[in-house]
Image (cartoon, rainbow, N blue to C red; front, side, top):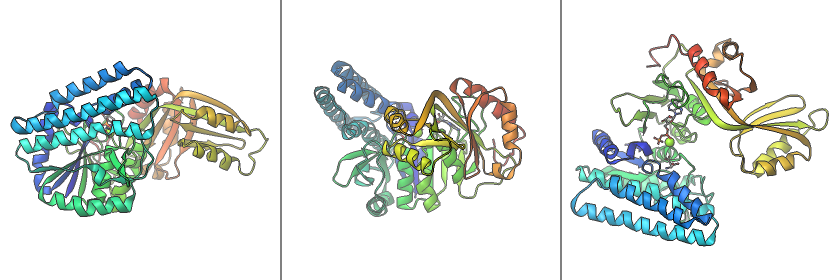
Length: 455
Ligand code: ADP
Ligand code: ASP
Ligand code: MG
């Protein structure tokens, strides 16, 4: 049994759905469970509609829903005959329900996490039905499974976590049985609380769903089908021309994902590592490319750095103790505040009297700063970016930091951190310098590539 996850761009149009159908057909004998994202940018648009509605802009919200309806009815009905009528009915019913929800929200004027998830989940509920019908129309024995019956989560709406015992038992029992006789298709990203409230696992969470399902059914492989040839040596939206990395470790992949490589959701590797299931990143537009293989024991590599990850839109906070020396308990007090406001800290570095750290989510920043000011002086800088060199060999190779800082010596570096795992070297630069910094680092570290690992 294998899990095949298709991201939004892999199912964004009728043509894309046809490509997916042929890919699934190729793997049919390996008894795939297909996990699918919402079509194209549907989730963004659903959330935009919800936000318009609560802001009292009812007509704008309904227009967005209309656009999504038209998009799904145009691209999402790749079947004919009686099946088409049935699918058409499903799609229209979902949109009628959305119309009502959006009108309701515009009256209430308040958007809870629970309503957000009810709306955001529609994308995957529809795409999974649509793909099931598309596979059936192509003669593949396919069956739809409602993810909300299998991925049981806590009630942290918009970023729910699985309740592992319940989830694994549902996956290992009923879902496994279903997958023995048909290609099962289910929506990624969504789940449900024990009492049946729809939840989501956080943006980009379909990768995580795929890994949870893979671990739950004991899959032999988890395939993540997307729009790039695999994990690349640099984010293609920052600099083009990166090389495909053929083989990396779970630890390297986790580090890349955590520091911004959107190609994989950071939580994905956790269930895969736990059950030691290889994860493959593959391109649904070029299925012949062998992609990236992520395992516990990757191929040995001569090059110290495997990839450069980066994260934009970062804020650096400098927190300076108002006492002369770092008082006992200073760090604990700082992190308690971040914890209370549920704000994750990505990178930290400390000196005798100050701590610098980075955050991505600024929503609670004013509250956080108010509390920090009770015992510290604060300054903050936004429009910063984290750049991170990732590779298991960084720890075994002297001089990596020297080489990195030499080539970017003209750039002002705001923070430096070598992760405790020693497989990354990260630093913070102004966002405006990001592209140049990644380009020179890429030129420095990706010459003379080991052909066993890089394409
Ligand atoms: P999907 O919709 O399939 O989940 P995503 O947009 O979430 O796809 O992830 C794929 C994108 O990740 C790529 O199009 C690419 O722009 C981005 N990306 C960022 N860093 C990397 C990297 N190091 N290697 C490959 N892709 C990357
Ligand atoms: N559709 C969801 C999102 O856009 C989940 C995913 O695509 O992974 O965030
Ligand atoms: Mg994604």
